[in-house]
Structure formats: C-alpha cells, structure tokens
Length: 608
Image (cartoon, rainbow, N blue to C red; front, side, top):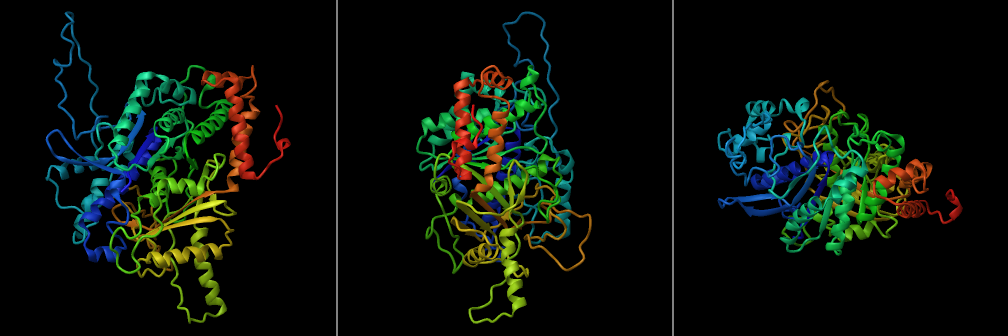
C-alpha cells in the first residue's frame, strides 16, 4: 500500500471533494457488509480499490478508533456550515459566555453570538446512526437494504428529501468525519464577502507567513506519517484566487518533497466568475481584461507547479450526458459529475498490484499503476503536462462477443461493431472551452473502465472481457494510434444515499440503461434508487488541447500583459508579476502551444 495525500483548494473544489469522499465511504461500507453472493451479483470486490491509500487510522483522546481521509482542504471562513473547522471527532466543549470573555477587562462586557446553522435532516440522521438511535440502514448509510423493502426506501427518501434545494455548503452532504488537521479556513476571508475572487487576492493570502506556514504544517502532518507515500492528488478551483494559493503551496511542496509527483485536477463552478471583492475594479474577476489574464496566469502557474495538469472547467450543459438530468446552476449537481471523473481517473494508483490478493478466475483487476508511472506515461516532457479528461457516466453496456467459431452476417457484424464503437464514442471530453465528444488523435492515454455491464442486462463483465471490448471499441471507432494504458476493475462507482437526483428514469439500480420500453416520465433518481453505475474515463495528452492553450496565450498577448505601461502589465504587477516574469510566462505558454500543435516556426506567433 502506497499512501496518497489529497489537497483541495477552494469552495467548489470542496464540493467536488465531498462527493469523492462519499464514494470512498460508500465503498468501504459495502465492502465491510457485502457477502460473497452479493459481491458476485453486483460485480464488486472489497480489495479491488484500496481504501488505505487515501485514509489514515488514528484514535481520539478517549481512545476511540478513527478512520479519516488523508486530506487538507482549504476554503474561506464561513464555508463549513454546521461542521466546525476542527471537525467533531476531537471536538472539545465550547466555553460558556462568561468563560470566553477576557477577564482582565474591567469595563462593561457584552457577548455577541450568531445563531448556529441548523443541521439538515440527512446530517441529523447521521448523528442518530452514530448514537445508535436510528433503525437499521443499508450498507454504510447507502440506503440500499437487502431486505428493507418499501418501508426502508421511504425512510431513506425522507432523509434526503430536502437536499436538492437546500444544499448551501459542501458539508451539507458529507458523510465522512475529518481529522482536525484537515480543514483550514484562510484568515481575513469570508464566504460571500471576501472569497479570494482574483488571482492577486490569492497571491496576497499565500504571502502571509503565518497562513503559509499553517498550510505547509498541515500537509507535512499527513505526509510524514505515511510509510510509503506515492504523491499528492489535488482538486483546485481555478476560477479565482485559490489558483494562486494552490500554485504557491505546490511549488513549496515540490521543494520539500521533490521526488513525490503532484497530480492536479482543475475544476470550476458553472457560475464562475464570482463577484469580485477587489477594491480596484480594473483587476476585478468580472473585468474581461483581468479575466483573460487570470486564465493565462492560472494555467501557466498551476501547470508549472504540478507534474500532471488535468483540465476540467467545462460548463456542464444538461444535454451532455444523455442519461443524466443535470441542473448546471446547482454546484451540488455539477460537482457530482466532476467527482465521478476524479474518482475514475485516479483508480490506477488505487488498485492492488497484480497477484497481491487471491481472486477467482477472470476477476482480478487489471492495470494497477503507481502515480509516478501514470505521470510518466502521460507527461513525457515539461511542455506536455496539460491533459484532457473524458467521462462516460454511466458507461454503456457491452455487447456480448461471439465465440471464435461464430459466423455473423453483415447486419449482425455491423450491429456488433456499432455497439463496440459506442463505448469510446460515449466519452465526453470536458475542457474549459466547453464539453465536446471525444475524437481525434492523442500522444498518450490512460483509460479506466469500472464496473462494466453487459448491454442485455445480464450482469457484470469480467475485467479481461471488458478490456478486450475497450480495445475493439477503439478500433471500431477509428481512434488513432497512441501510447495507451488500460485499467479495468469489476468495482463500479458506488452511489451514496445523499447523491443528487441526476439519473434519468431509464437508469437502473446497477446502472443498466433500459431501452425499448415506456419509462415513467418526470422521475429522476438519486442515491435511494441507484446503487452503483459503470463508469469510464480517459486522460489524454492530445493535440485537441492546442486551441484551448492558444486562447490563453492570445489573452495574455492581446492585453499586453508582458509590455510595460499597459493596463495588463499594471494588473499583473498588482498580482506580484514583474515584466520579466510576465515574459517568461508568455514564453512558457508559447512552448506549450508548440508542443501540442507541433509548431516549430517562431513566426507562427506575433512578435513583441
């Protein structure tokens, strides 16, 4: 087992992270309670995805055992809702009003306290479960009872009834407990007032010595207790100032842990950019000039500070995924899709190495890969770190392959080819230029297929057969040659009880998509009615990224961010970048564009 430390930067990143940790908690619970029979029926296995990679074992001051994420989550103050920043596992009683007043003051005393935020029904039910007051539930709070029937379903529906319209904080649906070192709310920030909406505000926040040292100490706590750490995985809301915080902290970590790779997943909410809090309107988040400069600076700084930069800033249109009913204005919805992508493409370095456990025939997961090896596979040069991510969610079923002696007529062969080609064609590429179907060549790819199901609804597909189908799908879809790695496991994406209602009616309990029959209209499904889904992801270093990279470069050049005396230069100076640093940034972006376009001519770019 090789540990991974997870870092989350910014409010939307924590929305994504809350779903991601719920996936892990759900998988843990089901693994602990699953029988061999249910595992066979659902295509899951406890050892397929190693939880210890992401979690740590500890104990409270009272000696109670704890199992918490190896996580540092950064956010603004007031963003943690009903959960205090120090968590609740080690929480000391709050002081009384009299105890909290400084007694050396001899004048009149007054205490002002805001009303505590009331927990929603779902969080209250979690408290009741821990206190042993709730009725028996499904596996680890999943809401999936083996013998519960309609009564248990109604109880689960009541627990999550208000989440769709009431989620304000990422902690409103978080199932796991956090270690006291995990959540750090940055000083001099506040949700709705000073949210670090510009890159410059993030730079200023990170430059405060006390703040920087506190962040570094928290990361050091989790890193130094690890025996065989393999690296850092990061979720970064790059729409505002947390991009600068992430760039600063990751640069610092690269100096302290030079041998540990840093995999970065850049996300942003559908509603970004957010209202600015900067006093200087010229540098505000909504100013087109400042926005263009932020895009260029964020990409340049974060790609330089990481070893693999995975771009996913797509505005998730409701029609992107045919079997999802997304409401893009709800971070609760969109972050669930981003979390599904993150959970899928990080699977290779969470799989057990081959032969580590005993498996029945054809059940062993395939394609375990250390984080450093994943980085080496994709980021072959410093100029090709930027990676696109594509997601199929839920992934389509696989048609059953005929035996070696079977003879198919032309129509049967065409139908089989169309079914296989549909696997890869179902992938939707997510970039900050908007989501689009996956097409075109790649330099290198990492494909993950979890929980594959047969298209006829007959059950799970063994990993070797799923891998063969992926190969056939690439060939049938006309995908070009590339360096490719395949990771396949029978473990699907587990859907926890508080998962948003985004599945359309045709999605079944295990993610099978029903066709050819009339479906109930207007009924969407969440974690109560869908237990798991097959998911497929692809990371690709590809020329398809060249237009996005060029647009960032052109934004920097258009506004003269590297020319002294321009408005762009003044904004960059406020953000801490001098003329020489701006030119280096411009040159770095040029080199990236060349690497993805295959351009060598210097005259392909405008001169200074």
